[in-house]
Image (cartoon, rainbow, N blue to C red; front, side, top):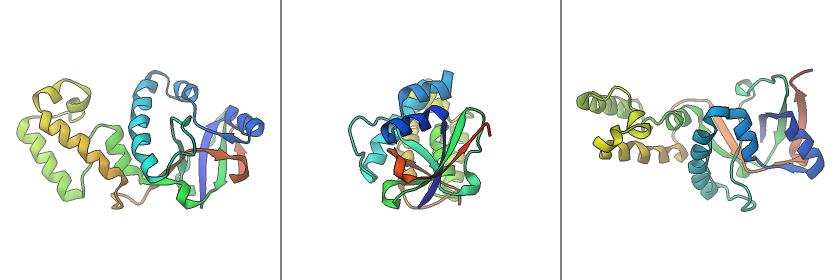
Length: 188
């Protein structure tokens, strides 16, 4: 399967030296800056579940490497980055719906479908909850623990086969040198 990933230029140097790359905390810290703790926690949640679908090849791997499944949706190169075009076995990729991931990232309820979302929105309105993420990020979850639990439980749907959109994304545990088909540098 052909996939694409945008990485810091240092990743390519590491692949040249070691023959592979696994996501490192320092790269998350650099890329996400003030939001790195948030993403590391989110990626931990994701990793705990994704490794049940595609087992990690070694225990030292803590975070996934994100890839674009569709070429037209890949991140574009920017200065200091590389786009790696990879050819990997599909059974090495955890594929998810990008819209579903958006619900999880924003601490929203992940609906089964549009009808389920409408019911959930009505429930929020009934309780006077305008900012759904405050149930997870703030103290509103203390006042509505069942609603908070419902939202967190809904995130498991990320790995269920239904789609909310046609845009897919994926994760790998490791980029191997032999999987690289092309490299595009952001400053060329």
